[in-house]
Image (cartoon, rainbow, N blue to C red; front, side):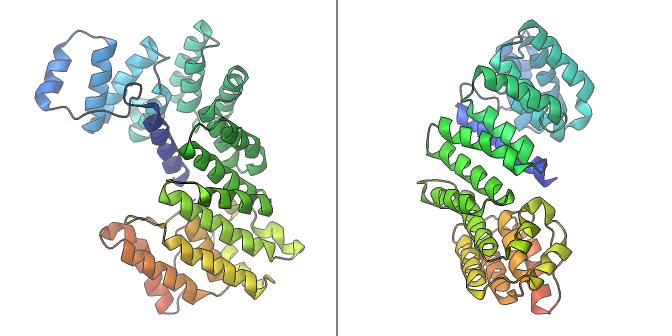
Amino acid sequence: MRKIVVMLMVAAASALAMGAEESLRIFPYYTAAQISELEKQPVSLQTQVKLYQAYDRGKEKRKAAAILHWLLKERPDYPWLGNAIFTSFYECPDAWDQTELKKTWLAALAKQPDNPTILENAAVSLKLTDKAFSRELFAKLLKLQPENFQANHSCGDSYRLSGHPEQALPYYQAMLRSAKDDNQRAQAFDMIARSALSAGKTAMAAEFARNLLDCPDIHSSDRYNACTVLGRAVLREGMPEKDAAFSTNYETLKDLPAFLKYRNLEIPKANIDKAAEWLKKSVSYCGDVYTPEGTLTMILACELYGLERHQDVLDFLETLAKRCKAEPDSSYGMRDYIAALKAGRTPNWRICW
């Protein structure tokens, strides 16, 4: 589920980057009277888009999905239609049939096989439900537009989230080459750092994590991701070669027993101390609302817990809980963890990244 959440966040961020005149995801509120008036108007692209915006913001997801079906058949080249369908597929799954969706995209591509917008829309909408076909479409798009930032991002994600971080790296490096601003550079630094760490390229991971920390005006989540990569990298630097492969890919660290095995690893205290410092530093970059489950920072906390640095982990969690006091739901998991640690019990870590 965490993967889906992350991909939805990427889809939303991509739409935001397009600008209000192009995006399906940026729109005003509509009153009931305005919606009623729109529904009476003749069907057109303009009215359909406005109705989609109204229904989606009004939580009428099935009606919004119906508009997307219309757009898919009438305007498969509409900017960021793929992102909207991708999101709708998970918000209103019973409104979509994966087989029919693929057939509709194939029909559109049969008419315009080299239309980059249709290729991107189709690839984005299917990137979790039909990964192989989506990757094929992205590959074709990248032949037409080798420096397409979003296509490289999505191709990299398809490999990384399938457990192949080394194959993802060339795509994330292409993202960096095509980045147009600090925000895009930060995204590329983040993905390169994380994939390099998962691929066992510790020095590369640390280099790009530091580049990420140096980026101006980036989101706080990017900064605590960077701290986490640096903390985890310093642990790996201290591992004997025979143990280094144990935890290169964080996808393998979903179960608590894996973290508990850390206590048997021969890591110098200096490296563990430095990793604990990065965990502490990450807290300064967390916002008021912070959900611990599934985050990279929590994986570093679990690794340190496995190395029996319980007080460092407790201090980290208590600081986070204080920062999240305005949002009780966000600190719920942390309160559970804190109570268990104080009682000398092993927390029921809910790591689902």
